[in-house]
Image 1 (tube, rainbow, N blue to C red):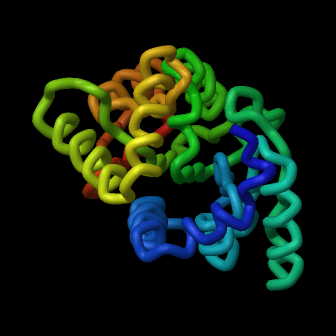
Image 2 (image 1 turned 180 degrees about the horizontal axis):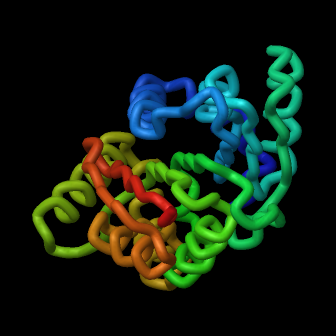
Length: 223
């Protein structure tokens, strides 16, 4: 998926009430301090960065899509947010010094990485966070399984798409093909996030279900 062509679309998604509520939950869980050096992982058009910037000493906003980064850089300039640095980077290779950030946040970025990709990205995040640094990650947190919550989420997604008529049916068929070939998104269940974060060396790991498909994981790099 080419996110460079979806800047306006994603800006609309970020402005939706549902994503604004998710952002509220992430910022509340992050409990930013005025002296925090933060990083927004998969920043997109700035849903979290623009909220964090007035609350912390510095934010580095990273995204893999140059068009997203350019858009966010221009928006920060328009708002005169001088404490924000916008960079193109892969979550698996942040190109930042060891132990240089005290707070990391993310919203709907990690499900674009498969399981091994998440493992590498979380190890990279653990490297970049300072001892005692906090990570707050919001994402799609379910799997395609027969577990009650997973089944409910999948069925609700199918119902919503089916209500769109023929276009929705086509999308269902297309997504089914992508799932079958391993080319769909890669959400993980909350329990898998606990394992991934623990494997990366994080402690004090907690996950929360946020409604619908969303979940949040909160963790700390050991001091």
